Image (tube, rainbow, N blue to C red; front, side):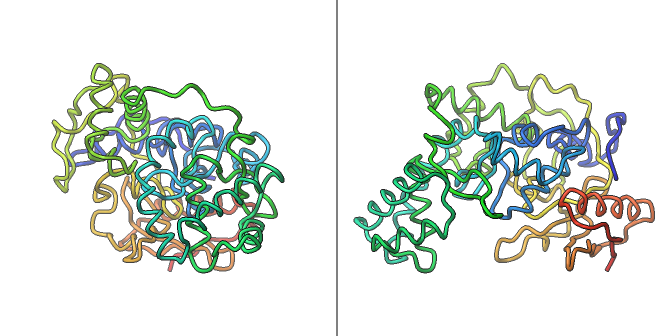
Length: 375
């Protein structure tokens, strides 16, 4: 099983120092986390429309955990939830951070949600009725799977065909009524925010909340720019700038190397003043689908370089292999075998490390050990 050991800060030239700083902020280098909550709290939000990919994001940033530990955080500890948040996409967040992100990232989703409901044949009255049905179900009868809610919506005459049910559930989510919580028969069920998470904390004044958002984003993504934050969170650039301004005494300009693709200048990039500069390039890692390094900033070129095809034209972020801090391969898992497809030559030592990573992926997922394959 490949685990990390302490190494001196990277001193490589080019864009490597920026990559090292971001990879360390992302917990892919340095001291690994010891709980799912520590990983998710550091990253603030982990894209989660691919459930396995979200769990693998936890694996690659921790030690000794399993996918069952993530499920236990959902079901028993109630410390992690999944909800439509940043950019209107499902994200894995801690229960505490839901209260920060929901009011900042969901109001701007209402217009698109209303339009998509109409396109799916759900009129305004039916949409309101659908939200009422969903809320009543989770409030009265506890966790509900999508099929449970579909049956109730069908009985109430609310359209559910195609993507209609998704946008009815999204409407209930935007209004702050539901999140995805416990695992029920292998599926993450919808629950009442009020009953599952308890009473909300006192709301933050908006500029204070934006400052907290900027601080937390930089902790897991710095060095970064306000534009990076705006793109990642799906908030207006003006709000991202207000967030950075709110913590101006806590940040300093980045004085290392700038991105090779020129997407940000040294003066635009900032890092938390508390950053100790002990940045590392991690050992070879296997990262799951939609891993945070592929969409944590306005540009992914720093890590992807010439392999832009790891993000498909229809918006799928494929599982990737990282060597020397950059993407060198994609991988799949047909029949429970990790199959690695190099996009360039991978040396013998890196191949051995990736094979050990493949074994750890299977351990984490609770699957039988099988030898990795290089296609």
